[in-house]
Image 1 (cartoon, rainbow, N blue to C red):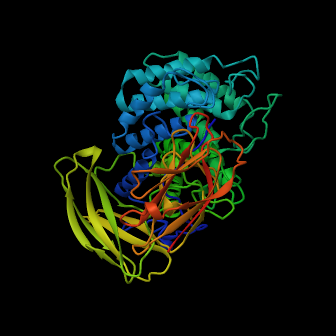
Image 2 (spheres, rainbow, N blue to C red; image 1 turned 120 degrees about the vertical axis):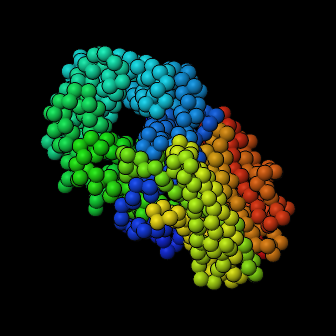
Image 3 (cartoon, one colour; image 1 turned 90 degrees about the vertical axis):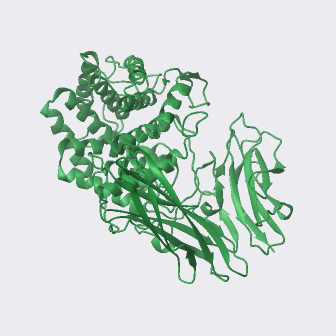
Length: 631
C-alpha cells in the first residue's frame, strides 16, 4: 500500500567500498576513520544532516511524503525519533500539519490507493496502526492530548478486527479479513502497550496487549529458529513466508513495550531470543550489516521493502537502551558506521543497501523511503543522553555539473554550518577547504561564530567558496572538501562532488542522471529508464553549456501524458511539447528533439521541465533517456 518520490541526487557507491576517490561519498569527520563508530556529537550531527535531507521531501500541501501513505507515517515517526533523541524540535510544525490536514475522509488515490475513512483509518489495518504509533510519538514530544486521543481512536478501530473465531485470535491484515500476519499483530501489541503506558489507570489496552502477545508467540509465525515468517496460511499454520526485518523488529519492539508495562522477565527472555536469532547465523545479517531479502545483488526492494530495515533498527535501538547489552549496542554502531561510510552520496542521501552494494542491473536505490530507513540507523547511534554540543557541515550545491569552456570555469559553493550548544556558549568554527591538484578554492581558510541556544533549533551560519576549474580539465568526478572544526572536540567534513563533462547522455533512474537532475519535485523513478511525474509533480534537468556555446539541442525518449517546457533561467518557461491524448500504456514512446538555442540563458544554461498533461488521471510524462549536444 505504497508508491514513491525520489529527491535530487543519486550515488555512485561501489560494491562494498567507500567511493571517496570519485567524490560520491563524503569524507569522514576529522578524527574518525572509515569503519569507526562516531562519537556522540558527531552522531548527532550525522543524524541532523540526514534528517534535513529527508524533510526536504516532505510535501506541505498534502502534508505527507509523496506518494505513499503508510510509508509517510513511518517517515514521520522516524523524524519523531530524531527529535526525541537529539532535542531538535524544528519539525514539530510538519507533524501537526499532517495531523490537521490528513485526519479527514479522502477518496482512493488522493493519499492512499484505498479510500481513507477518517482518523487515519482505512481497509489496510496495518496502515492504520502505523499512524496510531506516529501520533503516540507526537504526544510524547508535545504532551498535546489530541495526538493521544487520535491514537486511541485508531486502536478502537483496529480492535474491531481482532477475531478469535479464526486461528484463535489475531488482528486481520485487511478489511476483507483475508490474512493474518506478523506485521499487523506486532503493531497491535506495540500500539496497545504504548497506550497503556501513557494512560493512567488503564487496564483495557494492557489486556489487549497481553492477549495479542500470547496469540502472536503461540501462533506459529515465530519459527523454530526464532525468526518471524510473514503470516499464517488458510490452515492457521506458519506460511513459510519471507523473514522480513520489520516483522522481526516489531516482535522485539512489542515485547519490550509490554515488558515496560508488566516487568515480566519472561518477556525479555523471548525478546532476546528474537534478537539473537536476527543477528545470528542464518538470520538477517550479511558481513555484519543488516540485509533484507530483497537487498541481494540480483534483486531490488519494492517501495515497501525499502523501509523495513529502519523499522527493525528503531526497535533495536529500544532493545539496546533497555538491556544495556554490549552486543546489541555494538550492532547499533556497526549499522550506523556502514550507512555513513558506504551508503551515502555527497548530497547526504542514504541508500537502500546499507552495505553500499550496487550494480548496473540492480542499482542501490535512493529515495525518501531509503532515507528514512537508514536515518533510523544513524538515530540509534546517538547516545540516549544527548550530547550538549554538536557541529555539522554540508556543501551546496553538493553535486554541481561543469561543462567547461576553453578557459577557467568558476563554481560557487556554500558551506552550511549548524551547531548546538548551551545558550551563552558561542561556537567558533574554523573552516578549511581543499580542492583537487591544479584547482583553486577561495578562501582556503575562514572563521565564523555561531550562537546556539540549546538543541531545539540549531544555530546556522555559512561560508561562501569560489572554486576555479582549469581549462582542459578531463571529464570525471572531482571532490571539493570543507572541514569544519571547533576546538578539539567538534569536527565535521563535507564534500561536493563536481562532475566535469563535455557530453550529456544518460538513462533516467541511474547514477548518471543524478548530476543533471536539478529539481526532482515529486517525480518518481522505479528503476532504470523510468522517471515520471504525474499529478502536479514535475522534474527539471539543467544543462550548463560552456560559455562559448552558440547552439544546443536535446533529445528525450518520452511517452505517456507529457508537457515539456524549456527555460534559460529555471523560472520563466516556454512549452515546446504536449501530448494531447490520454495515453497510459506508452504507445506514443518516441525520441523528441528540442532546439535549445533560443533558450540559452545569459550563463548559457538551459533547463528542461517535464510534467503531466492530464494531472487528474495519474499517468504523467515518463522519460527513458536524455542526451544533449552543443556547438
